[in-house]
Amino acid sequence: MEFANAEQERVKICLIGNSKLSQIVHSLIPEFEALASITIIDNIFNDAVRAARDLIERQQVDIFISAGANAFYLQDTLPIPVLALKVEQADLIQAVLTARRISPKILLLTYERQEANVELLGLFEGLDLTHHTYSTAEHAKEIFHGLRNDGFGVVIGSSYACDLAEQWGLESVLIYSRESCRNLLRKAIRHAGQYKRQVQQAQLGQFLLEQNPQPQVLTNQDGIVIAWNSAAAQFLGNMSRRRRLDSVLDSKLIEAPSLRAEGLLVGERLCSLNKQPFEVEGERVGFLYSFLPSPQALAQDDGRRLVFQSSRMAEVQNQLSVYGATPGTVLIRGETGTGKELAARQVHVSSANAKGPFVAINCAAIPAELFESELFGYAEGAFTSAKSGGKSGLLESANHGTFFMDEINSLPMPQQAKLLRVLQEREVSPVGARRPISLNIKFVAACNVDLMDEVRAGRFREDLYYRISTFAVHIPPLRERAEDIPLLTSYLMRREGQRYGLEIEPDALIKGVAPVFRRYHWPGNVRQLENVVERLIVSQRLYGSCEAMLDALPRVIPELYAPLSEGENGGHLHHVEQEEIVKALQLFGGNKSMAAEYLGISQTTLWRRLKRLQSGEGYA
Image (cartoon, rainbow, N blue to C red; front, side):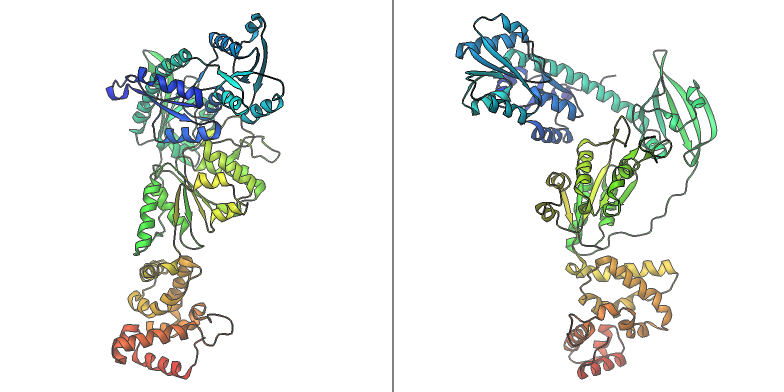
């Protein structure tokens, strides 16, 4: 089946090259205008991969073309086809003839994995040709450095080799011809069309699988998994192509040509299974496994969420939603207790993987020696104490969901390098396993320090920082959004009241604690506020009324009344109440009854506190 849409017939080709090769391909673009949109990226190696991945993420490319070491490097790294420009025999001969007119002493420099048949060049008389191969860009520079005094008059090679030659003041000849580049573009157009059709067919199959809300898995004739829907990924976990279902199902079920079975235990869930042969033009090519799991109680939401009314937190909420909808990693920065995990869950809810699992780890809590086995998992027999059958890692358990890494700044440097590779390759290799597992994960990281300061101090990798900080969100501390404290307090009081089954008077209690809460600096942020509110709700049992409770605040939450600094006379309450009471009296023209009502205390309590304030007594 083909989707013959006119707007899709024009393929998108990207050349990753540099210098002379880019110039040749650029001159050929008008010839292929009707068939292809051709983009040129003038970069090599790591820079080229970064640019290529950006195009892939934006779906702006169907196929890449390149040459020399760049082509092989991209083929090893990118998930979509990369065609390499070959060194044709005719091109090599023509390059030698051109170079001989410049100088008889020629250096031929090619990439070590690139085929170059140089034996025929021995037929040329009066030719002093030396052939060297290089493995990396640095190796190529070393070759030039070592041969700088050997008297070479001209260099033949790729664009990169020609650029190096010019840097050394040598003449150069590009090993590729215009006709070879033209043929490469023709081949790329054909391959891109085939690749697009394959992708369309695969996506059609996936679309059809997703129409069934129950877990479905498609295998080939040999029982190798080739496709599955998201329900199967959630039910079976650890789904990957080229694996067999014998780790999930009994071998008798896999060998059966078709079956209907009830009461199967898969993992910890009972289910029924319907297995049907899948045929194409009367020939069996595979099997469709359809599972019907037994009902399962869903974990109840504990009600924890971001609560705010400030414009700063509204902006944070918008950032979490917008950045969460992208495929990129989100970095959440904020002090301890500001709600970074709740923010990460908001990112998860906004992501394309919202229906998948949310797996959270504290990077500071994982011992360095267990990092790989915990995150990546391990294959059976990977090490002496390895569990029989191996073990899935945390990254596998987060597949098709979100993986939240708290305190990422605490990762040691070796573990940072391993994590960087996972983020770059989007796959994980369990310890001792031969094949990697593809990952479809929304990554979220969090830290309570400035990571750029850690980079400058040499404690955090710069490349990892730039990998995770594309979408950065800063959660302000509670003291910088004091307008959120009343709403947060109300929300927490009602939540804790329901949790402990207590009837409370939140409005009166909030009004009474507001002056103290508003002036306190909350070093522990929202987490500290949660603890204080919980203590207040439970402690209310000790006092018969809200008014008595408020009078006892300095004894129930003494940390909020601690001195501002060592040796300073009076506690925090003294400063808070003096300012609040004076403001209230001024506001109501000295009317103590109205001031007491505004402050949420009785007239008797106001009179008592005024007396203590006038006498200079504290409340600790």
